[in-house]
Length: 195
View 1 (cartoon, rainbow, N blue to C red):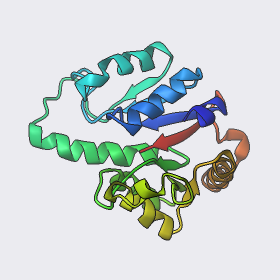
View 2: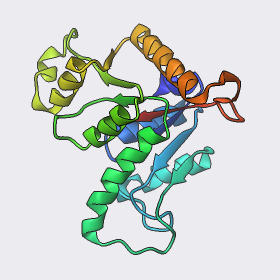
View 3: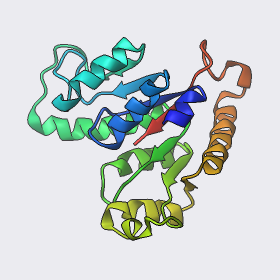
View 4: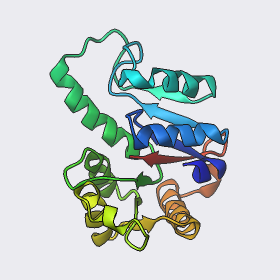
């Protein structure tokens, strides 16, 4: 996230604990922009509550908290699960690419990845297979990474692989925009989702 935010990408994630938080923080640490897609209305308490300070830091640094739910709407406990799925689909919908750090084959990140597949949004997953940490890659927590790599997702780890993925996102942006001069918006920043 730091490398990409430093290159002008806006980092989009879901303000969840773990990889999402690290992605938002990475962008903020290099003065980049980040957007947190929320599963709750803007005026509801931050979910998860442990990220209340991170949400404020995002706003303080010129980032955005985004929700599809109108202020004042009361959510029921069972709604939160479906809202989390919807949030995971909004992230790639707003992005030129999706980076999955760690996922099992049944993890929530798959909602974002499946949406990206349906919309032909480029996907990258961390590929730990050629690293000293290979024993961790064989763990169930990474079974989704392995599966997505087998399906043809971009494997990223070192800076060269990130550059290749940036080229893939550039091609995607050209396809959907038809005009590179207008594809980056007014401020020239490029959206990227971390799931």
